[in-house]
Length: 300
Image 1 (tube, one colour):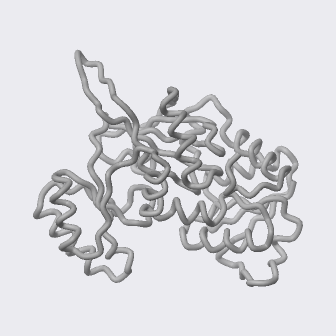
Image 2 (spheres, rainbow, N blue to C red):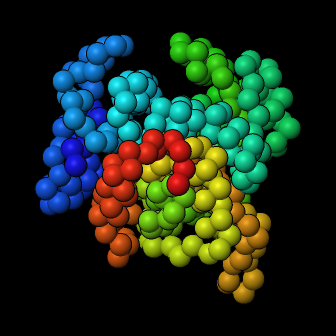
């Protein structure tokens, strides 16, 4: 098959994917979106004869718009623009999960500093303030007091971009120092890992320690439902254990909450801790997608 890779920088994740594609003798068209022009009626030459396009753009805006054009050109795209739009915006993400009945942290959205402060006081301390668009745990704040809330809200209100004036306030979930990342294709897990840290943020990008994780039936159910909620495709689904308690050095939990679904999921850390060949599993799925010509926004 001929695979188009939308990118702005080739990271370790993309190198793993490209290596697997080349080992199988697939033709690759690397499409640097920074240098490309997307015409509304005529597809660029780079899109000629592509069987499938894989979005690996770093910037959310580029991801959403480039995949819109790929879809308009009639090329199956992973993940499609609707999935990208839902996952890239935390408000859309939360609304989709809530509408599908997937447990997700309680969240308020406010448009002024005063309204946001009311939400923070309602949730109590600590609670979490997140940017509506962002990744790798950047610009997230755990708010422990009213004075901290006032300072952070005032700072955000003075920033220029309109997104900083959308205050996404979320309950703080007491988790056992870890969360769970699942890589899934149309709701079917490829592999899972646990990310542990002494810091309240447990992103691998923030230096969390990683290890394999075996999904139980409830986690499998939520991964499938969360995937369906956002439109399916190649996704990173993040879960946290809730209702955590500890007795005699052993801890237990009652359920999971899905706090985020990622549409341009990174998998290098997962590939390092699991016995599963993650790039191979991803390419297996891409081959199936290309063979059926299915739109990645329609779940299997």
